[in-house]
Image (cartoon, rainbow, N blue to C red; front, side):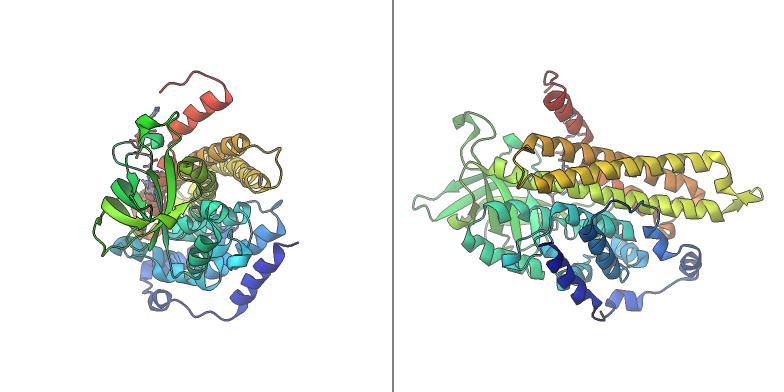
Length: 449
Ligand SMILES: Cc1cc2nc3c(=O)[nH]c(=O)nc-3n(C[C@H](O)[C@H](O)[C@H](O)COP(=O)(O)OP(=O)(O)OC[C@H]3O[C@@H](n4cnc5c(N)ncnc54)[C@H](O)[C@@H]3O)c2cc1C
């Protein structure tokens, strides 16, 4: 019951008339789009998925998020992708209604809900047509702040969380490095404490950092004790919540041109003796890997939900097109070669959905139920991310093929979904590494690397 109040509060905010975003108001609807608007009902985005067995909170979140996403139709995301422009007004709309604090503590202005509701929020966002770009514009604010909320001290929480929730401060997550990749424990970025203990000097390089151009804060994982001096490689890493002051000496970044999700930036970030105050350290020095794992399992759950959303959106578009497109005198969906792969994708997505919300439930319940181990949460979250990303990728590929030539046309959106659905297959952990993890940690096979 405790969780209902904040959602209701968010809903009350939403029930106030909300101004349309400038982009929505200006949207030029071409003749072709007008045709799409007639044949592709926007509400059809949300119909395919079986909705039974979700909690009241999850359904409430879904309904409320749909009210926000309705203001940002496919045309908005097409334009943002084409012009590579940050969806600032989308981020602001979610912040205005309090959604960035969905899984943050109530005492700092959050809703105090869990990853089960946050995953539903991100699934609803991607499913609306916002795709990975929409999700990536906010998701680090949700998952990267989980370890901060759990391990940060009172002063850190008071000085960061309210601004993150209000949208004043955007957050990015700085883990991946160019020379170590998935071998996270060997990352080379160092944070060296000054002689007076008042600051750290950060040197090294991060890569693929989403939203670093627009973020004011970074959740950073860096080595505070050299690898050669620790007993185990997972020791000696520390987590910081740092300012990304682009005007300060020792910090540079460079945008990466990429295949999809072009509305959000991805970056190489270079630190060269960048100075950070000592009180940006979150939790104990040297324990950063264990701390950040808390965010990583949440991230896998959210990414699973995001993938599901794109998969259902693609499948809905494919099924709609297959019913309406007539060739050889009958709808193409009457051919089983078109219908059966789509039916198969529906079942794959539904199965992945069960795995995803099982993982989110374990994640949330593990906070109070000691019988749910970190291992159980990790296995469930990794499995869900894998299954959802694969099911959604297959659905997107089939959606493009079901549209024939029109699948390749930007106006039909399915090519955008296909470009974006590669992300949850690669990040935050690849398919191969999840299989390595299940092979060794569940099946007890010898480690291959
Ligand atoms: C769009 C996008 C956004 C991202 N955003 C962020 C972000 O905000 N913050 C952040 O920190 N990172 C981010 N990442 C990085 C992402 O998490 C990494 O790309 C991912 O973890 C893979 O690491 P890598 O690219 O270095 O691959 P590599 O480690 O170089 O691996 C390359 C390939 O080799 C395979 N491989 C490697 N070792 C093994 C092995 N032992 N067995 C089998 N296969 C193996 C991998 O599975 C992969 O297929 C993002 C990436 C993308 C594409």
